[in-house]
Image 1 (cartoon, rainbow, N blue to C red):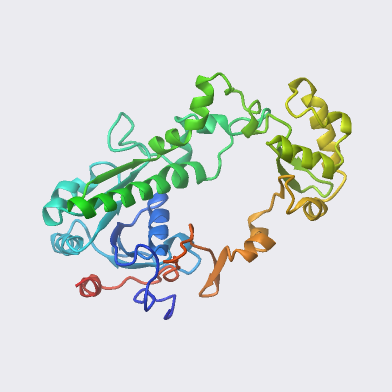
Image 2 (image 1 turned 45 degrees about the vertical axis):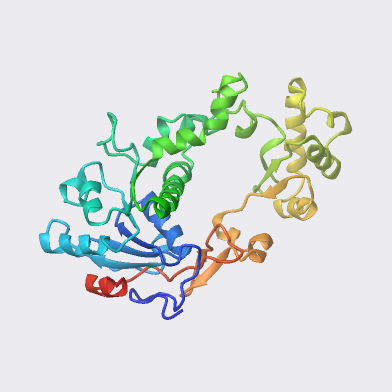
Length: 373
C-alpha cells in the first residue's frame, strides 16, 4: 500500500471478493457510509461524491476509510453530466437522501438507467421510499421506535434503552442494504439489468424481530421488559456486577452449560436443578448476585474463560482491543497509525483488506474517469 492517508492512492493490488466492482456513493451519514466501508473492505472501488466546500477529512473517521472523494455541485448541469458519465461506468450507486431528491436532481433511477441499464441503484432511508412518514426527518432511535425493537430493549426497572445505533442504522439499515445490493449484483450478472434496492431501516429491523414475532405468536414472548430470556428475565442469561464494580455476562442457556457453570462457580448444589424452575428463580438470582460479587471481573474471567460455562467479561471499548481473543484474531488493524476494526466477515481465498484511511482531500472527478476507463 502506498501512503494510506492520500485521497489519490489505493493499494497496488486491491484484494477481496468484490475487486473490480465500481461503486458511486453520494455522501451521507449513518448506514450508507458504513455499508460502503464494508464494500470497500471487500475490494470494491468506492468513489464518494461530496458537495463543494467539504471540510478536509482525517484519519480517525473510520467509517469513511477506503474511498476516493470527489466534489460536484449536483445542481450544476456540467457537474451533473460529469457524474452521469461516471455512473455509466459504475456497477452500483448508493444514496441516502430523502425520497424524491435524486429525481429532482436528474439522477433518479429512471434517468440513470437510460445511461446504464445494468446499474444497481441502492437507496438507503429510515422510513423507505413511500408511506406516510417517508418524507419525514428521523434518526436511528425514531426508526426503531415503531418496529417493536426499542420497546423490547431494557430492564424490568428501566424504560426503553437506546442500543447505540447498532440495531437501526447498522443492523436494519447497512446490512440489509448490503444484502440487497449484493443480491442485485448477482442477478444482474445473469440478466444484464440492474434494479432499485429500497433499503429502509424500519423494514430491516422488523425483519430482524422475526424470532420475537414467532415467540409472540406462540405465547412465549412478553412485552414487559425483563421477563424474557434474552432480555435478562431468566437468571442464567444476564449481566452481573463483580466485586470491583465491573460486570460479567452469563449466557448459560443449554442445560449442560448451566451445569458446567454451577460446578465451576460455586452455585449451591440445591439450586443446580433450578435453571428452568421459575418459582425458584428469585433464589437462584440472589445466589448469583452474591457469588459474582465475591470476586473481581479479572478473577472470574481467569477462572471461567475458555470453559463451557458461557461467561465473558463486559469490557469497555477501550479494553476490547487488548482482549487476548481479539488480539489473536487480529480484530484491530493499524492503518496510518490508527487502530481500525478489521474487515468482516473473513474470506479464505479472497481476503478483504482496508483500502486506505479516510481520504483527507478530494480529487478531480476527471481522475476517476481516467481510472475507470
